[in-house]
Image (cartoon, rainbow, N blue to C red; front, side, top):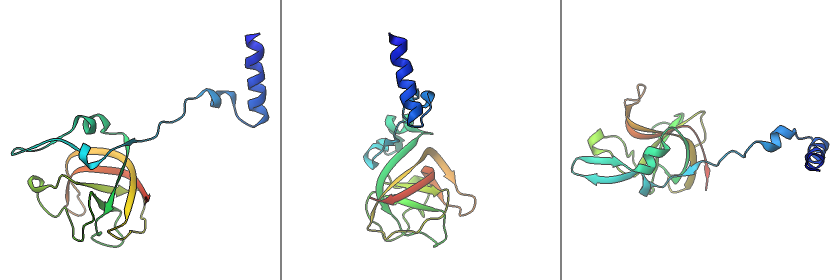
Length: 152
């Protein structure tokens, strides 16, 4: 009897054009959501310490919500995601002065930038650790690579 039920499901899947193996595959998980409040676990005189959640998500796809800081040039393939709207470049400083409420976003391809006061959602692969962009010389502590964004 059980085989007959399985056979019937396979037949229905074929009729609607789905492979039976595709129907058994688990759905892909949505990227984890990460807020600016979850980036650092401790801020002390020694600097910023990454949160346990951030460490656990390193290398994975995450989604963040925030504001696009004004880009340095119109044709850039990166921008800075900020917790609050900003009107100037927020990451033109040293690693020790790194703000705790920004993340550098590297796009796979150029997109039209939005006004600084517009809330956006960004999804990309999370990278952590100090890194200096060889093209611009800008330093970042947190990045989303292969990112894409949309107006929230």
